[in-house]
Image (spheres, rainbow, N blue to C red):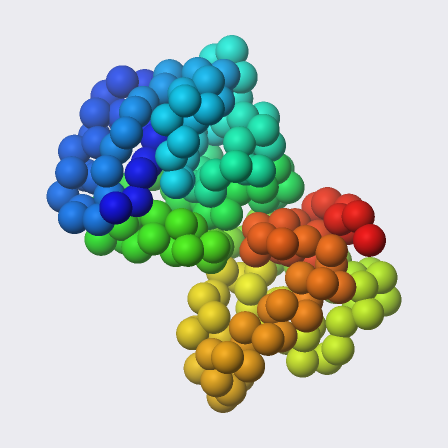
Length: 211
């Protein structure tokens, strides 16, 4: 069972999300929060596997909360905003996924939660352009800085687009194990240990981890 904490300042939206999640067999809502600070406080006690975070909340916004939560739990942003600055800020803060309200159903939401919980990353179609824009400007710098091979750059481009290991393997006509090995090598070169961190570094949204 995947333990989920809901964080949104609108009680109607929280109620709607809770109702959606009740239809998903392997997801359990363990708590709710109305502010970013409350999400941090409740996550410390409840230890959820995944936190669903709105962007605009009082006291502490969702992106700021994500930067403090992402070290201990997986973050999936759920918001009405597809503003490029907010999308890239969320990735920089450690969010593993970004979905825009009105673009997903219970099946999509359940799959997104599972993907994030398993260490994957994903973006809704509405949020993807912001990442592509960052990706267009970042690779030329990243290639020199990180020393990735041509194949590793191919894999990292696909990771940044939100593809799973299986989807990358299918796209590149290699095995899942080969993709996993490439990603492990990429993590070592980028000095990170999470998919979201790797994407942030690759897109030039964060510095490399300690070497």
